[in-house]
Length: 205
Image (cartoon, rainbow, N blue to C red; front, top):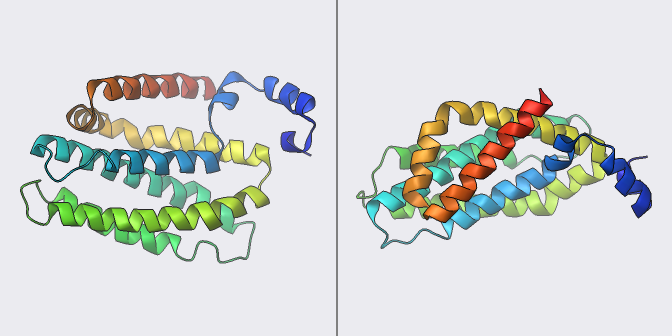
């Protein structure tokens, strides 16, 4: 039995008994949903008539977020799902990642002045939207059916730790892209969020 099987008061007490960092780190499936929301929200800031510097910043934020997200899924989340089910729920996921990486490489090789830049981003985001729909209607509900709350939290903690490892060498690039692509208020909130996650992971260690 896990916390989700308990009455509210008992589940709340079980949650309160966890270390603080465990309560702050989202479970794996919610982390994936948050990644999807972050990428789609960033994309909605993009317009063809934006200054080149802001376009480049937004595309940089999107590409880095997708690269880290795909790596987390491939290294941690997908193997965990495959280990407990014979259902072919992930049959589309890795090929979709491969196509997204191809388009990301194309974008990184361009500048905003390239006539193919906007169209390539649109192609990438069409693939992303299709991928998000597959995951949020099939893969994530299946994972939540298969895994206990404790297991989802364990996977979330592993994914958070790995995310910081992947992001660390890219910190200057991430900061530069956010500064160019996001309004200062968004950039400040993002910086504070990254600092908070760093504090959490020091507690995990």
